[in-house]
Length: 311
Ligand SMILES: [Zn+2]
Image (cartoon, rainbow, N blue to C red; front, side, top):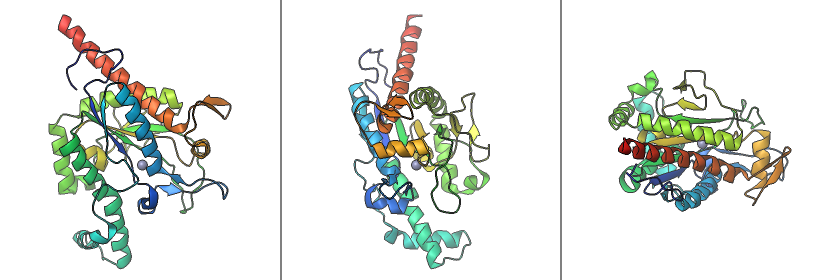
């Protein structure tokens, strides 16, 4: 964080913020599996990669007005990586053989697909963040979804919110050379405490804005780290390979009835009545919860510095 005095109208002055709209949109949604259709035949398809980009653009406008320099890892619904499923076939085959699996055509195809949409894409964004943007923090924007057993999307309850910070490495993850190396790099950069303080503050303003209850893990795939039930540790590729404090957001279940209805409403101006309550559109509400938390956090940090300088 740059050493600047508190500023009442531009509290984020001097900060470089990278925003990573999770997933890909457009014709790429089918490679990514974060899209589905629920409700009647006229209902809009829910596409996480396009929804996160909408939130990212609102945040860019608002955080810039508050003094930050904001960079998006993608401006469009196009992938950042130059790799494609076709270029990753050999690598997918080699990966399967290394893990002792029989590289059948079906398995190669599904592995290459995951390599494209997850590892190649997120690593390309990581290079952009680590080598070009070099931000003070990164915001990874996502929407959550509850699992649908049997492969057919269904509405699920409850709706919920959580933030994820890096941690909770499993034994099999620790066996991967890359993962272990990246974990050590992260430890040496001493990002954890700032990531936790930021996640803690922003989770509370986001909850206040969205009115969502906390989501809980069972302690194996995610670990609680403090007394805030909105913040969980999980080892994800993005929060491991982005070398800056990462705020990883998972608000709103896309297959919850109310979230789905709000997606259908789109980015309307002003307020609309949703289940008896007047609310902003889904994307603005998400962005406002994040913005309020960042303003609170950096105001407090800068105020502390001023106070300690006067002691
Ligand atoms: Zn996501």
